[in-house]
Length: 133
Image (cartoon, rainbow, N blue to C red; front, side, top):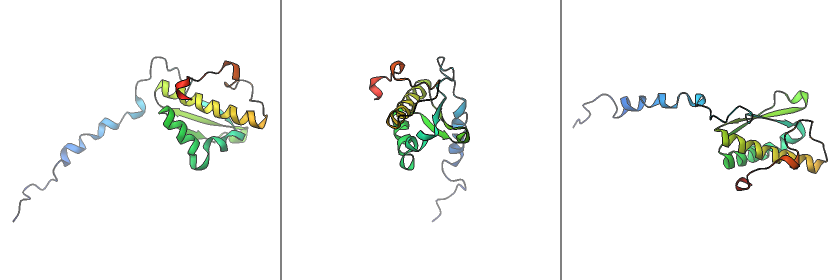
């Protein structure tokens, strides 16, 4: 008994039509507030190991709390720091940056090291929305 009159697998034609929806993932419109100021955080080398954690556990924690994708770019580590790159919506990036900065400040605090001038985490002026802490 046949029953396989059509040589095309069911749904094959329609499934291929779905593909373009995923393209343009990185070209999502930026939020009006998003001026790119939360795209990057410079991380002193002394903090990179802590921030990555075991198998990237700390980064995954930050990603799950913020909904933002965080990549650690270590191409600049010879100059003393690495860069955390944030990918997500404006508020997600802002939250992720806040969490990254808070962790870096924790490490610097414990090590007694001074953050480099211009590091955005001076305690008095830094506030993270309490819902994320």
